[in-house]
Length: 94
Length: 461
Image (cartoon, rainbow over all chains, first blue to last red):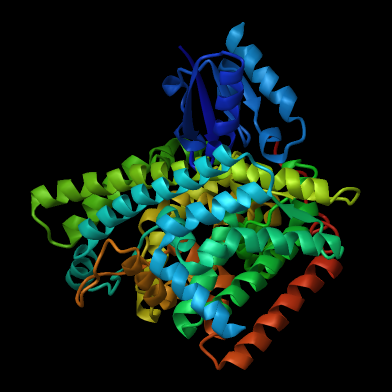
């Protein structure tokens, strides 16, 4: 089962907001994935087992170097939402 | 009119959020164009989130009920008011009568203002209306009037929009986020207070030359950034200093760690319930704001990724504890607790004022939170009342008082509280003056343009 990490400052607010959208989208495309919320401060490279990280804020370089990180801001503002959702789906199915 | 509002307020209060919120949210969702099942799902999820939140906040209250007083007596610090943290406070605020009405109220006010061309911010972050609901609830507590609480909430909603307009250019320049603004009262409120100090600090050359490196700080203090560890440490230290037995010390550590994890999880459920509605609100507002230049108003959580913000947020932990102790002789009784974990919300919007300098940010944070701790102490009776009304805890005499460090420390919270301690007409007049000041700041002195126009380019993202 694929895993998606949703990352924001607290792991509560913005990550929960985008999680619902992402889960609904993936379900509609028939992609199975676990979505887990995280706060950015908890992300150390050793702890990460996600296939994709979707973040509403900037992620430290060391993590971007090793993992697939997608900017989730468009899911909050609405601008570019579709493209981001497609990008996430693509990252999970390659 | 006031009597009608008072009756509504009373009705909302007696039915409680578990009944009122699902109804309000479902109706709101339908008006915004959601399908019935979707709207109902959001409403029901919200109510369920509340069940969870009341349970976990009750746990917090139960476990910490005597520790605050014991700690303060044994250590002689006089810090007997426990900070319950913003996750709990947000839920409590939404649960009050003003809180029940805040989301529709906020959306309506925002749309009207955009139509009148008085703001460019479209606040889609309906979740964060809770800060205004918090202030409204405090005012209701002070005055006993639901109408005044609504007034206070409405006025603060306007102020938040204008603060967002005011800070927009500077934030855009610093964080490279075009088209976005931050009506998040928590961070924007601090920014307002800090701005004059930042103007001064920026002139002090030698402070700027003592560069603190964000990455080293993150490596050293990083573990405190994890709530369960922070909770364990603080719980253990607090219980130990309060003179508990060894078993109880460990248990407290674990229970506090539990609270740090569980309350936010419940709040996450609330967010999930709210998010389809927020999305519908956004689409609705964008449709109705066609053709105007709009900034999308977001939660300042979006700004937390920058190393400077994280590093200074971590440093706020020892700073806040130190301040609490230092200010005790001056009247502070607030014991920083749950909100130690979220120092980043204080620093997020302070960082651009000093071009990302960690040391200067921490100094600003110290000034803002120092005053804030006193504010939090002042607001404690109102918060304790909110906790008691959540229906899960009794607060008998001799037990702890509660406050919320993050929110009660927002300048707008204690300023509005101070206003409404005066007779009603004066309070209303003062609020309106304060409101107009915000408007002029946004119009005449935008940050990043007129003020702080020479903000240096930030570090790379």
